[in-house]
Image (cartoon, rainbow, N blue to C red; front, side, top):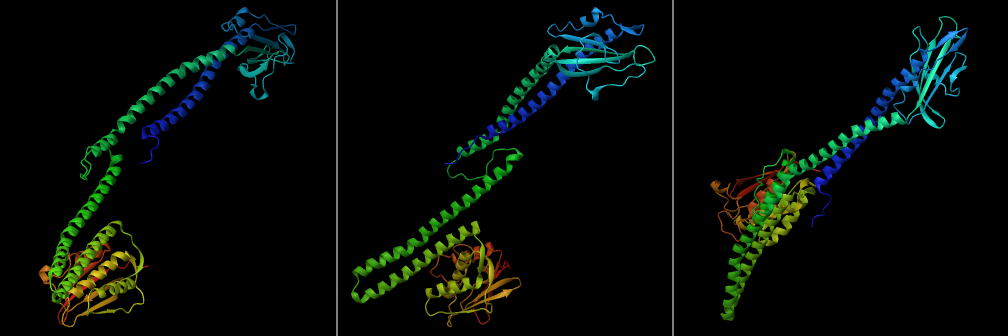
Length: 463
């Protein structure tokens, strides 16, 4: 059973959900910063207005600063009843004229220089009496000369109201963000479901097929799924080809083996009834049919092996000379009174290919030359030589040869040459398949003095 992991829909939704969450956090940080800035701007205007109202009541008489704190100066901050308000008016020497003498001074980096029109309001935050307080400092010159008349007005307000305003602005902005995020996730979940429907249709098509239906998938799919569908179609084509090969093998085996088995059975029955003098003839007939049956089985197995290995391409570094020598040793005992000569000037023949397939091809070539090409001399010559960047294997016999018009058909399954022989007509078909799998060519020609020459050219794919 195939191991199951988290569904694709869940993975996509989870990934997008994490992205949305990161986006929400970023929006929250931005909204929080904007809400704090907006609240500060709103209440800073009130602080600046209160300080300005106090500064407008300042006056100097007999070198003394007088101030009359107007009610409106502090009343404008009463919109925040939970906050406390602090103020101070001091001279240039730091002497408190009125108000809270222990108010914190502005940080040195934030102090603004005084120009002819007076300094701009200077805002800063500081802790005072255990609370966070927002302060404004406004400087004024009451006389054009001297520094004794440089007056500083400082007004502070605790942050409860402005922080509350910032929270209201934040939640007011965050609610639509959360709502839109949830709606977006719902849309994404639905969109993923719709986007994955082609997979469901492919699954349904496969489930509804007959067991022997291995044609291409017909369900239209998006371009993103096309590679997967192409891979499935290629897999089914390979599976169909393997099934066809297996079916042909079973059919060939049933057809080819049935005849010699029937002959062996018939000869055995006759042997039981015959006189002892005729028993030797029946036993010889049984041996011939058993030999033919062995050859048939070997050819069928060789055909199945080369068909399978030509599909999977189990290529590796090998020595073509050693493969040919081994194939000759295994093939010669199949025929008696045969003279097979192998000629090769090479000490080794490095090659990139399937040693099993190449061995089967050489054995079938040698066997065909021995069985179908046996003349009076019974001579079979094999030559392996370098040919360009590859190799050429030449096998010549002294048999009747193959007519020119039949040479293109000799590599088809179940097609024999001029002699009936004892095979299944698969030998040259196997050879053709092996040579084609290795990118080579094979050529038949007449041999001088009579006979047939089979020249196999294999391209250079050496070590």
